[in-house]
Image (cartoon, rainbow, N blue to C red):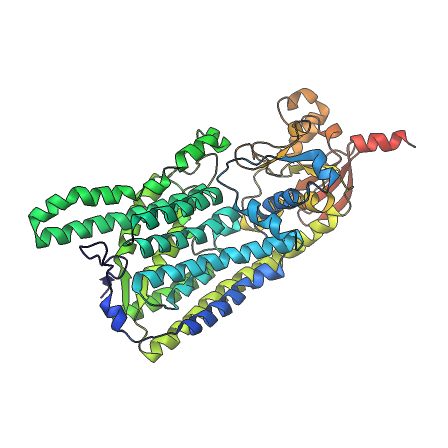
Length: 556
């Protein structure tokens, strides 16, 4: 049967100065030494790192766009072309962790390697946070939370939400710190929590929200347990102590008080109206945790985990911390209530399940005193991670030729040029196989210091903006690029493009990328477009009547 346990974090004594001790855990002999777990951690991290290390430009949807912003932040003072097009406006924005870290790495290495280091740091932070949280809940180290390595590659990660991914790891350490300090003086606990709140705010607003959710779940269970025990011992004393318990519960929110003024100071506050709730997709958000590229692999992983759970239940060697039940209850309510679009950011609700799964993994414990259980767990850990890594690496190997050819095409672009982006089919770009192409044009910003219309420069969401004289030539709303039919129509009838940044595309830009083309794609406008590179599902054209072309003709 399933054993719902209470251990150091939840087995509360009546006197707050006396932290509870899980005597069962303390009496249990050491099953895995810290050194052994550390070695397994390093080995699994090395396995999980293989796709990242082999692919400097992984096919993640928004990744290269974010990486281009990192390059501008690091290089704008030394690159006159970038300085001509872009400016950095440091503001209070809850989406800055990557912007603060990666440009510092680029001082020591190229931006692609800096991005790889940041990604692997995020991976290590997530799994080590899961491991530490389990240690705090159960009072001993266990390799079981290392299953988290098999979930690092998920659909939320593939979208390229790099600040949020880092924030998941930081959130796990924040929850661990709160539980570790819960029975200590509030003069220590609350300031430490406030430091984490501030760090999470500047990391990502959604990761801060998950931290608040976890503390709410923990404190609700603590309040209920404490009152129930007092009532069982002395009903009168329980009623007298209830106000004090409620004050202690409410005090948990004090470290979050700076969030509202910070948010109101932030230009992000102006995006609060970008809100929409959708019921369809809630199931998809849960599927995103386990399914990546292959339905078959997802079913295989689920089958392995189901077998392990069944085996553990049969032998009664698995337990689930009561904190996890509270997280499930609170998380389910919040997940259903969360909108799909929040602060003009998509997938607000669908990001939640993966964060909760890492917390829930930390709430599972396995009795590893039997040698066959320890061996079985080790086999399962390495098998799960190997299967997931093999799936991702196989998919990325198939997608990498398209990315490599895109990098080749970028070398044909003049340094400091202006690059326009359009779609051959406006409905493309949403499939996993298209993710590597969606923002590949931003490679031109990194390698050719070009102005690129799709680079993220949204006011309130990024610190990178196009300079005022070029702001009308780029997408400042993070929208979908125009279809090539729309561009052709504008070239023939300029009045049809009124209100769009691309209304003067034949003179405002030097090159045009058309994405998601097929093998039979023909030049849509031979009078304005000269094809110079045909890649896998994209075309690069030189715009014949652009400013560069006009200037070059004038010198002949």
